[in-house]
Image (cartoon, rainbow, N blue to C red):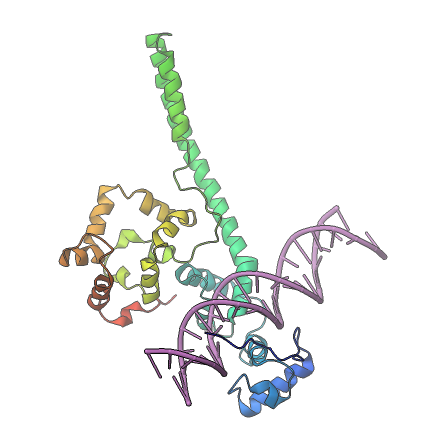
Length: 289
DNA sequence: AATACACCCAACCGCATCCTA
DNA sequence: GTAGGATGCGGTTGGGTGTAT
């Protein structure tokens, strides 16, 4: 579909708004409302495109906009919502009265993302240190055994000792997947609490579901596991029998059993059935924070 | 005081979606 | 059902400002 480019007409002003322009826009909208944004600048006597006017109004001039720094509560809310929704800034903004999507986006990129990254690095360092301590202890104990073995077997089996040491080095590698350079992923933690795979937790929203259906979802979860120790625990331990049993008790698995299917790629009918059987759509609303 | 660098945020751009004729 | 305009949304950028050297 061909679209008419914005501000195609020459002579339309771009760049920062002057206070005069702001006043004209405010006056016009207060009197007439914004109605048709495209027609507004002409009617108001502004040399701007409608898009620019809308942006200026929604992001800056609207009377209900809350100015000033974000409170810790607001930042916490943004972080939580971003974990659930990803970069859906407008949806996040709708949950923060007086804040615009642009503002939230800016705060995220300038403050929160860095802070989370820093926090994560700190956590990661702690975790690696504690892991290293555990491994170090294990190595020490192994060394003791090796030493006693060495004493018992003298020099004849030294090659075995070398092998044991190299194995311990191998074991020393981080358990978690390699760090992803991508930004903190959007959908990971909304469903991370797989230890509680009961019906309550199945009341995820439709958006999460569509993201699950995204073919990138699982790889994203795995690659972004750095962002959540829970995820690491949940997915690195998929071989864990207990967790497999929990999965079998999960609604998805039970529905698969009902439908006699063992695969996820049974087509849209399968997902349609999940939706219809999961109950009312009211369950798919965002949780209160 | 001058310069370089980093950070912040308002605004722009282009794509997606909605709406209507 | 389709075309095309209007609007919404998210990513990106550029200029202003603060800070370090």
